[in-house]
Image 1: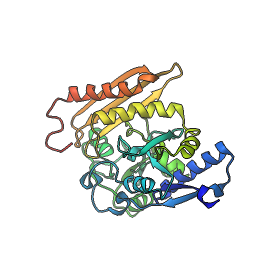
Image 2: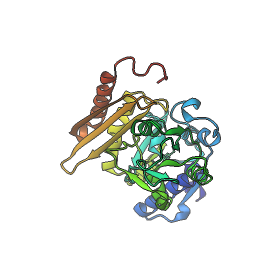
Image 3: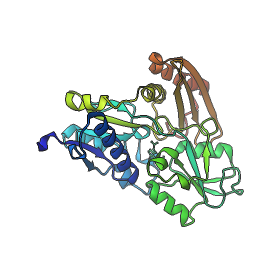
Image 4: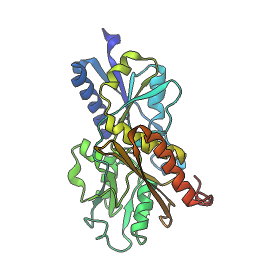
Length: 311
Ligand SMILES: NCc1[nH]cc(CCC(=O)O)c1CC(=O)O
């Protein structure tokens, strides 16, 4: 019956479509369903359309998710597949996150054209990145570099790099892995050296609250370890009221002994100031841990930290 088909809403980028296919493949495997039980619906988002301005100027989180969430609310799709990194900390009314999938590699990749590593970049080299976090961390490591805003999907950024507009760029290794493009990476940046964005590498699935059939299907493919880590990272982000204007980094890991450790960080966009914290607690307290970690860095930063560059 056609009405039984489960429609998965996604952005149209190659990465987004790869993520939607992964969601479909996991649902098929978990429930022994054929590919025909699903339809992947491509939805264009504001973040896809506005390519000439930094995202921090366009405004807040949700630029890559709003239209997909609207389609979910309207019933045009039944499941939304998102990059957790691009999600606001709260779902809109009527929607819930029912699953985080097993996390991909959380690390950032450096893709150098004129040098293979950050350290080998010549003095004053130009790096393109749209992420305030990456810009800030880079400036902190190498204040001599010229960091420019670099919008567009992975393919268009790599094209700009090839054309020589910049000497290097940074991308999430997770995205490269999902597109089998990891070979473009010339250096992989360890987490302790280059702390990832909250949620990096994790696909998240939203559905309508009350859609019990879809909720049940989706909950079966949730990854508990990723859920704990994401709960801590997203609570940290929520405590900071994280928007795209604030360089924020966070990474949580659930250890074998059931404890979760969160490393969180805030920076000024120029990389000159940084505050970080580490907290460990039991998995059940992941949310409180993330909140407390957020307070740690806010208290350390003091009230003037966010002044002057908008937060
Ligand atoms: N803002 C775009 C975006 N959102 C998620 C990813 C990567 C995949 C992931 O983190 O899961 C990317 C591209 C990138 O940062 O290279």
